[in-house]
Length: 184
Image (cartoon, rainbow, N blue to C red; front, top):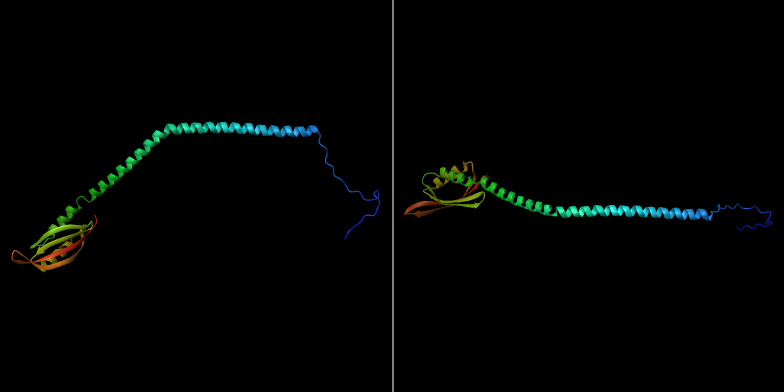
């Protein structure tokens, strides 16, 4: 809907007008000077901070250059220490198992029954070894296997081959054993 006011201008209700107070040129110039002063002060402060930080960076770079040879020497010493530790580990491992094979051969020797001879003793893996030999009977081979299994260093003995053979016109039993040892 459209409204039309037909009253004369004098009788019409006057609307209020809000007027801002007028600023003088002095106030305007003061505000601009204050703004420029704040900008100048901020710029000077930031320039000072930049110079301080650049000085700190330069000092840190100088200290880094002075410490570079020492850091290189520390890295070199660390590498040498790792190499020495590695070698000492190898030596310790060898020392731990140094007498193991001697003890193993000693156990085999003590558990060898009469009329039984070994022709070959070989290491198949670190925890397994093979025995080849001759005996006069199957019973002697069985005694040897039983004796070896009672040894504290040997955990299991398996018979791989047992066959008749001749040695100096005498009938013998040739055998091959595989034995597992306890890791020391």
